[in-house]
Image (cartoon, rainbow, N blue to C red; front, side, top):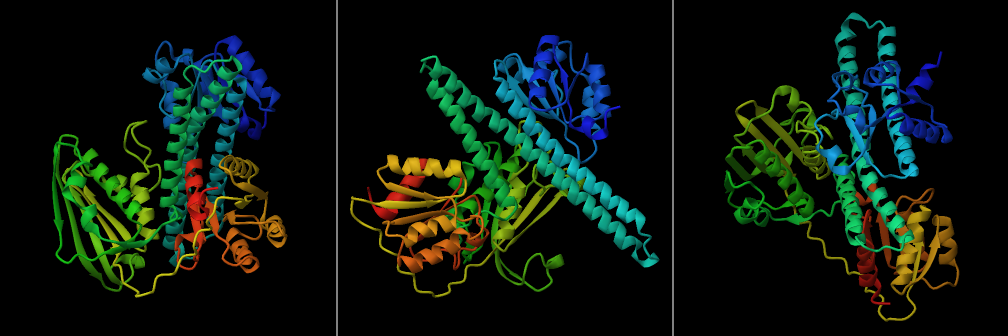
Length: 538
């Protein structure tokens, strides 16, 4: 009998015999065990024994949806979200079908390359292993709790702790499954675009390449927005905090452009409203998310009210110290829409939690608002009742003028000859891409894989007019490298590149004069603009 581990890692295949056999051989070549099911009933029975993923041809649902398969998907435990790769015959047929199951589906449309199917299978298995890790942690927690007989006075405390840990693991499982699901779709679009371009170039064709490139770029942009919202939820996005006046943000003309025509908008701004300390772009996105949610709660129209007022918060006014004592501006968004049940309200700020139909939202809007409020040293509260609408209160700290003299910036290096750039980046693909782009823009480029290699260049006689460094380097990080570089070459301009930089979040003390930051992912033209602004044209 096969081991439990082998069953958990196997791929179940349901497809016409020739396709099933070819798929099984392909997976075997990569060391992936598989089993071919004969029909949907057999597939459901095999799923009950264990599987890492299912690969199902669209033809399996030709006669209609499978109630057994849908029942299995719906009744999975909280940690489980079985990946299903659907082999579609045509893009429109698969997307428009109502026979397909509702779950963690990734569509792969024929014709496709074997390498593409293999990559998708390996990605699904990695996702499934993370789910198994969450399962094992839940089981271990339960066993440890059962093994310890709590003293009478501690029963309630231990029970509450167990519930808290269980909910935390459920949230982690939901987050992992949501990220994997959305990125699988995005990677399919990006990888498919590259393969189509490669195929047409090999055939000597250039027709339609603009559309293929556009699809790839759109997928990259969607991926960037997804990571941006995840960083916002985790309070690890890079914020440019500054004094922000809310009157422009709350202009009725701008707000009306964000709401549906059937919604009546009312705006009430208190006299002498304080400015806030926040990132203006992130604040605008947070407000737009709240407006979008409110409008979606009123599909038939209704009243939407926005209020802005000054608030002095006393010590202990918010439970658990959620908001420190001090002065804040409260943005209040009130709708008279459908409202939320208590069970929905408890999960509203969790990432990838959504009450919308599949494909109509990924459940990151409120989680982004929550993360933004926390990173801005503010808070957000949510009040709602079925049939009575929803109220969201966003608190942001009042801006206090510190009276600090502005720091005199380092003047850009002028001239048009011989600009030398040192790129320090540990990812070889990113490093190669950056150097190639800079050379094409006319800059002399030198590269290093870590801080130690970069220091060798900086200590040499090699000219360096600009240091470009990733913040999260292994060993000595990019900020530490910049400090030493400035000692070796005073006033050397520095451009940090980063996915997220915890030390850059607060900004105070991280970016000195002559230091700049650009966040990944960025377009090469953005990099060119930054470098040109710092150094002048090559």
